[in-house]
Amino acid sequence: MKEFKVESLIYYSKLTLDSKHIANDSKKEIQEKLDEYAAKGYRFTTSTSTNFGAAIYIHLYFEKDI
Image 1 (tube, one colour):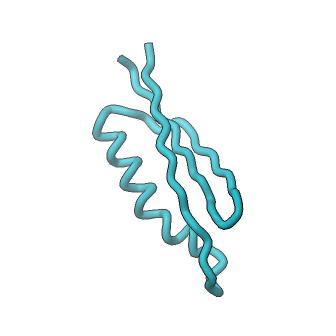
Image 2 (spheres, rainbow, N blue to C red):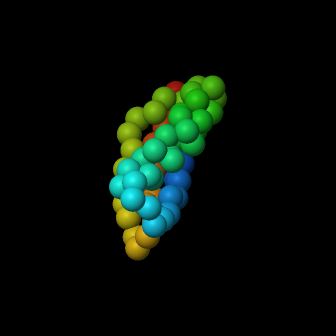
């Protein structure tokens, strides 16, 4: 049997000349979430992202055997 978890992160666009600012700014937080769930025995399975207005929603999916 497996246990599943979803972690949602939200990032907002800002006025800048750096078109990759969300990717650059989110790397640290995403890595922290990956490390946090790995320490709890979860495996990262996949991710999705959607945008709505000025926000980008990133969903990280994890699973572990129970």
